[in-house]
Image 1: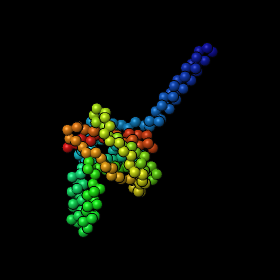
Image 2: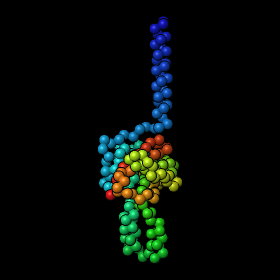
Image 3: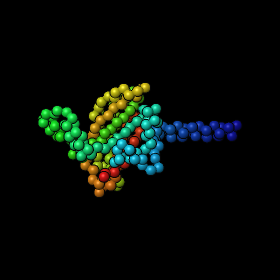
Image 4: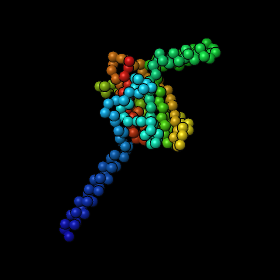
Length: 191
């Protein structure tokens, strides 16, 4: 009898400890898997994925988060090409030039399950240098996603970014999703 009571008490303590550990993990959400080496983005050579975020997996789970950096030179070339294609008034061209961010912009593209969860304002962006100093922090403007397929909704937004200094080295960009309770990590390497 003594042995079974001790065994029951031990099992009960083990279950309580396990439940406490499980509760400690829930607020942080499930950790994202990481690549051994940062994976370069073929569409955006300045950005490399650190956390695994493949299109196929993300489309199934509704966690697709893609970021790309567009330099001011690239954006200016696009404006000049659009001016050639369209018959813009000079005021339209000047307005576009004024809206051009001096440091370029991050193109944030997300796909989530459900329209209300494709709101970019559920995300926070933070960029740090390799020594941990925060150089950029932003929360995108609120918005809703458009239907993408199955139960996925997509939202895209341009976020003005700081001027990248090639001598400063790579920046670590962390995108935190408050709904999913996950962090997506990227490395930005100025060229």
